[in-house]
Image (cartoon, rainbow, N blue to C red; front, side, top):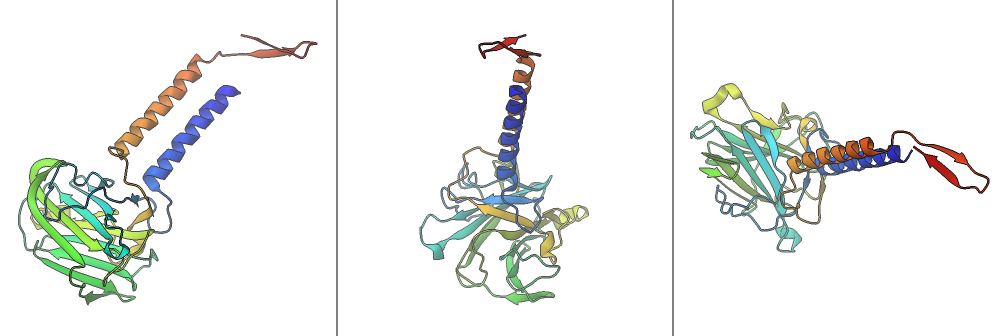
Length: 277
């Protein structure tokens, strides 16, 4: 009985860790693709490249495709709510060509209301040809062009190497005020879609997170499921969680094998329990 309880407890803890770290508290959106929003340790320098080797290690690494990743955090270091800013890093590893049709795309469902068409408070931000930023807000059926406030958005991209890939490739660094400006979104849950397109590799098509999501259908986007008041633990990535999971299972199996196979008990008149192997 004790060994059954031990294994059950270990597996329960394992499942709890996986659910909290990988999925967070899923609410609407697409719960199969979600992450937790963490505060940054130091604000990023928005110059299109890694200013230091640990500049973007304070957010979860999210896989867009085999050829692209992004990470996301929020800068609250000023302590002033109106200055809070979301910071986003996007990299496409197999793109080092400068094409007019290239684009980065960030979609935000600010109130996580989903929907099968862009609604008010749904936003789409396109950076086209590495030169032009264009913003939209949903109107219930389609997108309307909007103009962000001055200083609301800061962005830069360049061809550079990074800790994620030593071969020079396109890197985008992006910052947007979180609760002040034309594009407003407060605490999670929020819907999110991140996409990249490389015109020189058009056969790959649009690479997006969540996979196969439509920019015009917020219900298909990914999800910021929750937020943390403290920075992400250093080095605490999905890989570490998986490794800890295997360790937990291995320990459980070890103790299960070492436990005596059978036990019987009989009552004595004194009320003592006599165990025999």
